[in-house]
Length: 257
Image (cartoon, rainbow, N blue to C red; front, side, top):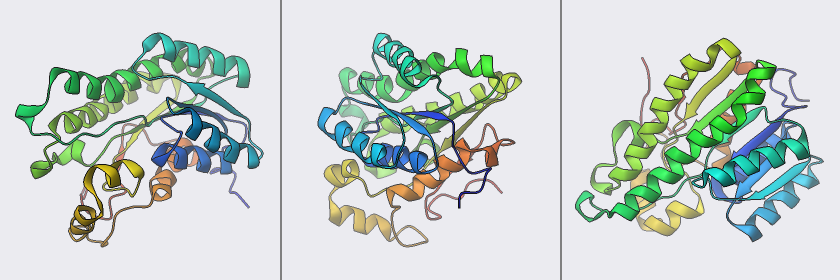
């Protein structure tokens, strides 16, 4: 039986980029814990599949097909989701893209798209949910960053991705302080390697297996192992935690002291 402090019953969670991969895992686990879900992505078919899985759990789900980099679309998603489900208590800024290029080969379009999805998207999704959270004097915002936002990618040549993920950590700290008077908690999850479709497609299994050798626990994470961190930070168990970074990375990056 779910512990009362860990239960998300009676809440509504908006998970960006939640049609597949880590975002879908986050949405499904939050639904299992009792939250109704705003499932937002640009992938229509995958979103429908994930929405059906959430509905089977007995949760309400509102599907929104929108790009987080489109501020007008983000505002519409928030308004329509609130109309459909009544409120948004939890926001998981998960939407992201990946690209591996040396710094001198990254185009202006590459750079803009990376920042638009990760940083601009998170910024304006957060802005869209704040009125309701402030009114209710409670809310949970979880930004999905990366260990590369703390360490850089080195030879993996993805500096624009690293910069975007580092920006999310800065926003997390700033928002945590700014929004604390309204009892709105803002934290970040910064995973290491996660076995989802995007890194497998970009890097391939041979490179992933080689990278796993550098992880103290000897492997990359399963998506749900990152979702456990998200669900914890979204729950009442984390009501005295804000401005922090939780890094489910198998020990690849040791955070704190």
